[in-house]
Length: 401
Image 1 (tube, rainbow, N blue to C red):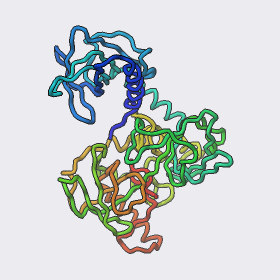
Image 2: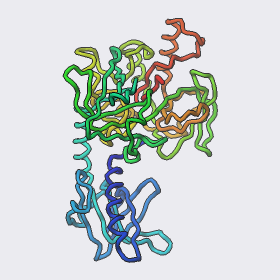
Image 3: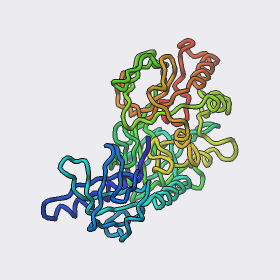
Image 4: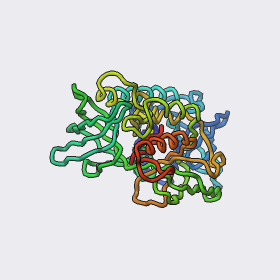
């Protein structure tokens, strides 16, 4: 599940161009965006979520370069066709041929991969040094404050988030963790149990945070044993480990699928106590120092826009849980077997029998076994198959819903 900050940039950029073009006479050009995959003598190929498009250049085609930190027409400067390479992001205006197999470019607006990487690194550092993330514990409209629970290996800490006067609220769209698809929001839409990510300044004591941007989303994570796999429908039916009920997991183009290596899982479940203990969630920092100051940071990560892709929902430090998820081996539906265990994160929408996967993680058996052992030791009811809802799995925020 890739995201994505760059798509936000292009969304604003494309809107500006469309407004300009609206004032022009017909025929109006079409627009395509995407990442360069092939460069030829006569043109190139770009790829986006809808597929691949062949683009042809003409002698009159104009080429412009747009800086990622100023995505506007006024910031575009002339460049050469030879400057375009694989990995660059393009917004192209032009015309399709009759059968729409080829696109003739009139103007090409380029964001180079090197410029994008530089901007991503800057954003990563900014969210790593000035970011905070956690689960919403309470919302106080009277004082305009949000209290979040920030978790670490040694326990959890309550931090009061105070929106600045110019704060920007955003909220993830349903079944999406793309920053580009997040919509304008407000304090009124923030709910207890939401995951929250904020950018701003920590208070001296680490227990308060002045936020200039707040990003929220309602997410849940379920774990279960795979019962059936329907490749044609792109669906998996699991038996929920907590409720023992069947849940249909729908996979889509935006679903990210990874496998947790067994050796990594064994190490993580063996470090810092059982994963069902309050502070044992992976992604927290090692003991040492004030807990509030240790855990109130956290690098950007995608459950939301994450890592270099933008600010995400995650509780880990500098790179965090989401970056850990991204580094795990990618898998496909064909790699999942009946009888294995998976964990799935999705939008919390009130449905109990069907979810659309945002992230799917296979290889979670060590976490489940550790949670079962902890539950048995604590005398929890539910028998051998029951799992406490309070254990964490790397990359899947909100597992303790």
